[in-house]
Length: 448
Image (cartoon, rainbow, N blue to C red):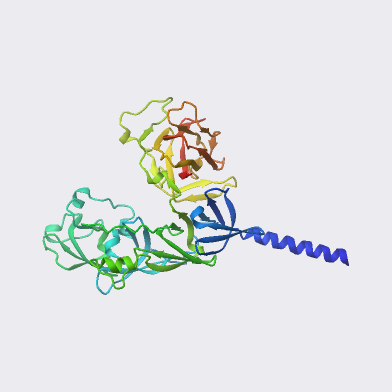
């Protein structure tokens, strides 16, 4: 009987352990520790508790780099919600969803996002609004039109227009209001005055800011969602399921463009809550490290294989130029882990062999850290070698083994405390440059 009771206890403990392991749904990257798999217990007072197995580990938010929410599919939880618009702010925030109505004073509009719910957006922060069904495949910025220093309304393809504007692709003028039905617009020559252009006729609209508002320097995290939205703001409390954030740009109450005192008193902004089922990554910014994708390389050298190292004569014409925070295909950054599952990166650099990017390092920089590997969808013939050189050294401070499509990414950390320059190289390996799309995931330099 005792033996049976003992077996029951052992079985129960095993089930508990399996349940704990099975519930690990995040990957935590911190500055001084190895990546940790677990689940979020809670977030409060600038501290996060992560449950990993039977342990509870506390981190100060200022010591975190990112939290990745592991999902089976990026198409999770759409619930039949199809975004009609993409709104990009001058802060880099991107919201996708539906325009519900103009605000009462026409200074903004109410927007419904699947991830963030109903939010007010002020026109003073808007950079561009795209009508997704119309603009998805055929919208490009007209550089000449943008130089007029006015708002620009871009017509959808094959839209029938009237009068003197029958053959134009855009109108230059002033946005009066953004509504559910369309854009109230007055063109430069008052040919269309307070005219409501329906959304069915519009590709996109860009917003001119004579004096761009100063972006508040109170951001703690970049929030990325499964719906492709990106949001910067402050982190509030969380129970591990509902996450609270504050956005300094989502403010409407009691605020006018001239009332800076009220603006300053509302600097923390509107509180919004997000369910973890919509979250993809949280990328933290507390000044302890700098992402190289936020910098411009002081030098770049990129060329195709061509049976040997033959540099092309016109670098601007090269197809596979490096991309910051995107792959060279201008898509989301993904690497594969050793299990073959995709890992998403909001920050990083997408390159193609051969590539060398050189960055200056600040005196307080201590380490260079990154995840390296073949882009998840590059192809089975991809093969590269990653190298990191410091200053004028001929020998690399780091050289990877040959990385293949199924290798799984590697996390590296290199001491750069005595270096003034760091050179990131992706070199040819077994198959020339065939499918050699590579990624420096979360490439960053860490302060001492």
